[in-house]
Amino acid sequence: MTQSRHDWPSLVASRSDAPAPPRASAARIGVGGPVGSGKTALIEALIPALHRRGVDLAVVTNDLVTKEDAERLRRSGLIAPERVLAVEAGACPHTVIREDPTLNMAAGDDLEAAFPGLELVIFESGGDNLASTFSLDLVDWWIFVIDVAGGDDIPRKKGPGVLKSDLLVVNKTDLAPHVGVDLPRMLAEADAVRGGRPVVATNARSGAGVEDVADAIAHAVLFRE
Image (cartoon, rainbow, N blue to C red; front, side, top):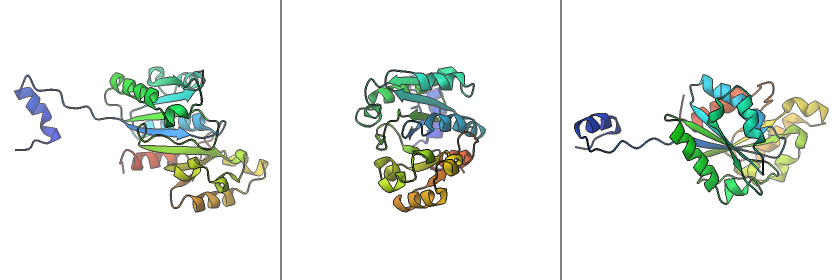
């Protein structure tokens, strides 16, 4: 008779030579976007939102030759410092999330080994353009962050990040009146180019819209109601 996964403990108890059951892998998501769009601020806001949903998580940051984003998260008090790892890309940060993600894959594996029961690993890309896309060898689902101050023409430029991400976040909505951006129009144009893929407007500093992003992760990635 075929045994289900729930039968493994009794099987192990009855057979001393039985191997341990395979460990379930944590889901892996990416957060990319241009420099200054608010990727780290969004992750800082998401950590408590996901914790409130009971999600056991860790973070991997990427940058050229620094661990600045990782150190910022470690100092934040929002997450245990040992749950944050940094990858120093040594070149364009997108190379290590797109062409050769092995350094990040290894960092994720290290976190899963260190924290049994880990459900989610968030990978933050270093940002310097609008073209960041995550390798599907690395992540299951990814978010692209743009900000209002970067210009309301970003959706119209149809960069790969805007078009291909599983969730587009339009951040810093509070700045729209100060930079001459028609926010409703920018959001409508983002909806139009994404072909039905979701768009969420946020102000990561105030927390506006962050719960919607956390809900999207919980539903689409962790399959929670």
